[in-house]
Image 1 (tube, rainbow, N blue to C red):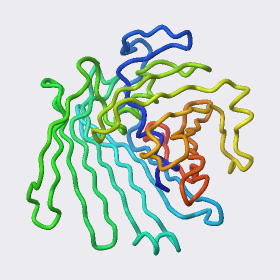
Image 2 (cartoon, helix red, strand yellow; image 1 turned 45 degrees about the vertical axis):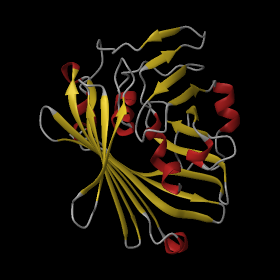
Image 3 (cartoon, one colour; image 1 turned 120 degrees about the vertical axis):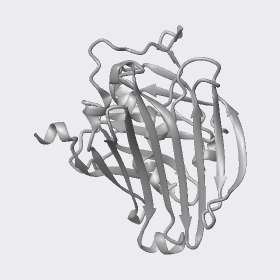
Length: 284
């Protein structure tokens, strides 16, 4: 939960349909003209987030990174771990998600291939692999015994009948590359995704400038909290009162932080960008 606040909002942006603020629903268009090569754009980028709540301002760390494996394949990794007193209480829980993707549409878009999900809590190890069969329109989920490598359970989950089906990490970089459309005040994204099988739809609304100003955090850590994304999720998924997640972007779209209001026991859980290693192309 703590790591969700820092870097978790990218998990939520996998879209197959977009609805404008006027309420007209249209099919998602893959915007090619003017879109850069997504692999080269983010290759080598790494962002680290610091997460906390109430009297524990640094209860967890989260990190998301991206790299090209070759001219056809990319990999993104999201990792979160509790620390300090909270780490001791939670047995230093560590969550790791590894998304393997292929480049499509001339490199302007990423397509999900495989998602590895690993959870460590003390001595307990849990591992799942999600295989995205884009041709058959199914996601195959395998639960694996970490000690032996044996597949313990397999189940198949149907993708949406049409349009892209992206895991949350793949969608995060597609979103940043403008695949689902530009950021506009009042714009709404009605999202179909299948990261875990129980998340059927996610609604994202870009707040107006006035609302963003009103909700902008008082402590900003020197970051540009410009765009506010209001993300509606299942209450049980976030363990919060209304199931709403606030994702914040800088003016250029860089994810600077997130807030989950009214989480059970913890109160407001938040995270902010503490360090960023820029992509290779920005390092010269």
